[in-house]
Length: 399
Image (tube, rainbow, N blue to C red; front, side):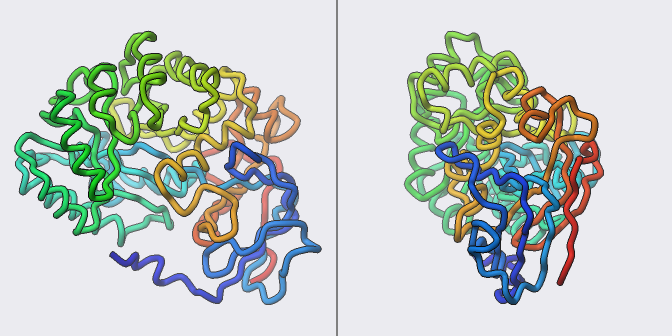
């Protein structure tokens, strides 16, 4: 299905971001690029390099980073949208726009499970998923990209239901286990049908979270074989360490760590992934809105926490919330690469942080300040209303 927002992007628009102080790529293999300029044409990255080596002629907009570092827009791998920019879970409006002010440019739904009266019959759940997919394709608050329409599987679904969903544009399953399918064999069969038709799957991991959910332990996770192990650190209640290790070692799927989970279990998962030399499997989400609220800075907080307490270099921590997720979720953003969507965040050390620069600020556990968020090559916000003020702030100097 065509994206009406993407269709509105001017193919001739040319953005130049220059005087970048540090360029974070989102790629674990090369997390820092030797470049100070990014050029985007038609909303996609067209050049990355030194100012003298890239074509800046004909720019329709120029952003002077003024020494600010630049990173790919952050990706939240686990959210629960419902209707527009409102969440009934906390009766809060503008939570998506607020998250944009946390540097997140893309969200992935793990199921629209907080919809009041959420239907559990097969016809109803398919209808709700298709509605959400359509609605959030056309509705992008502040430019935020929201991949939604993630049905929760229920007993009675057959293979043709998954084909119908895929044909309608649905590409995600909500968390397996939030419905009445909680056993491994049934989940594995339905996940297999979903995968056959190009629908990606996630499983609830740990203790129950909302009414109707239940314990999903390592045996069910491994048998279900979803593409992503959702909130492996619990959402909120984590499994015992031995079961977390069993999951990490027993499958090759994505290991999702979330803000609304057990922080000690998050650090334990990170340590195992590094021991296995499989850091590329680790992705980040917030699992919000949830009972603990809305977390506009949740991905930034995870990056800082994992760096500071997990002894992970900050430039690698950023990859967990950008490039890792993009590759795991098959997205066209999340990496500073030619051809990728020009979804970018300019940020710097928070004013008065003990860290001398962005990376040290994060490594010490402080939140950085966001100076500008760009989506599809268009600046969407300037200085964030939610982060501490950045030391260096970019400006638009030409258009």
